[in-house]
Length: 370
Image 1 (cartoon, rainbow, N blue to C red):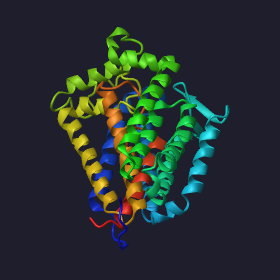
Image 2: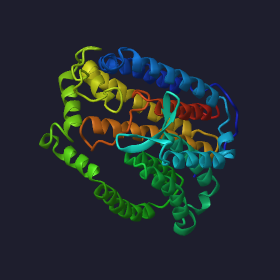
Image 3: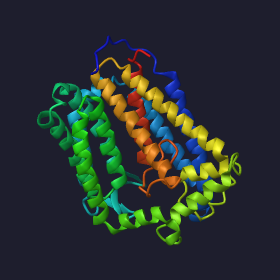
């Protein structure tokens, strides 16, 4: 499906770079605006989260710049050790005393005053490995036994480890990203139909097996049935978006960040953005993400080889899926998942790994014929 082209290195794609830094700047501003009240109350410093986000952004930019100058073929060479290291981290997080429990999930490992989320590393690590696997085995991908099933096993083993934490949101992003990569590599649609039936049954089993997931579904269908419990977060999110109107209440003028919407600087930061900057501000951010998706796809398809194309599509697919899921949750289209908004939400592992991922994409753009 993908053809090899001549390699010649040039400057990274300027348009893609501008989009990344614009989203990052908006993210830092909105983290401060949404968290200032909560940070001042809890830590006595209204800039507490903003300063840490700036630190994460700075580290991420350094990492992105470093990765951007590493030929993406290097990741192909070391894809297996990278995946093994990610598996070790996933195993480590499940060990009591090593893994940290937050919100009912053992998904973090403490490193000094900070923490890392191994599942974020696994998303990128699996994309790197799967791109190599698919590029080397494209002739088998149309075969159910030789290509499709073995590839699915590569995907669902790390998914199983992530579900042991449990972290359904991250697991869904990981699986959907990999399925996109498998599909564009040439897998048969009929195989996906069968997988879809099994997937729906498995997804229902995962929901039924955990009462809190059933509660989230119930709250999604009718949040006002339990407005102070399971429906609280989505109701407060909608209360933020509604008054924003066309122009918004003004930057820094949100009312919902006054202890109504819990920790608004994380998963629900888009609700505060819509409240303060209105429909126009929210639409502008969505436009930036759409342009990022378009440019990322162009870069991937213009890569000189199959590995570069699959790697680029995996990275931009992962970011776009997170955007789609996060904003769908914020506006009440799907149940709460715990997925952050790339570039905007507060968080060290998420932001740093996202910037590393786009660093790989920028390196691919250095070889792409756009």
